[in-house]
Amino acid sequence: MKKVLLAAALTVAAAAAQAKDIVDTAVAAGDFKTLATALQKAGLVDTLKGKGPFTVFAPTDAAFAKVPKAQLDALLADPAKLRAVLTYHVVPGKVMAKDVKAGQVKTVQGDTLDVTTAGGGVKVDGANVVKTDIVADNGVIHVIDSVVLPN
Image 1 (cartoon, one colour):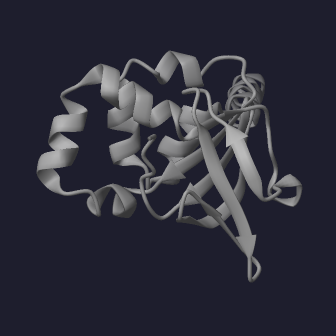
Image 2: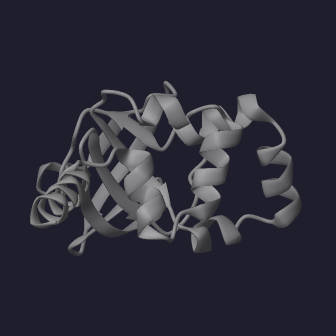
């Protein structure tokens, strides 16, 4: 009986110690339901579960709620446009908050994000970075308060 309990405890501990990718980390955080749905509709879940590393500027559900409903519904119904918008939030590599510098940063989508650092805060295309350095096994998430759109 003790061996069975010990084996079960070790299995649970091993599963808990297993690192989570960007998608699993965002889903576990609970504030990214719309982002998770959008990633699925755009066919990007497997990409962000991939090797990476990625830096994701992740809009919260509240950020998506700022987008007019008709515009958000249209975006969610158009996988190609949705993919472009979502990959605009992703930068190749793992950039921790301490390494962020003001300037232009090339996104996975191909355009550049405008990163500004003023008054102790960081903005990405005008969106405030409200939480930093949520580490995943294939990158890092920085939480932003607005959805940013490519040109």
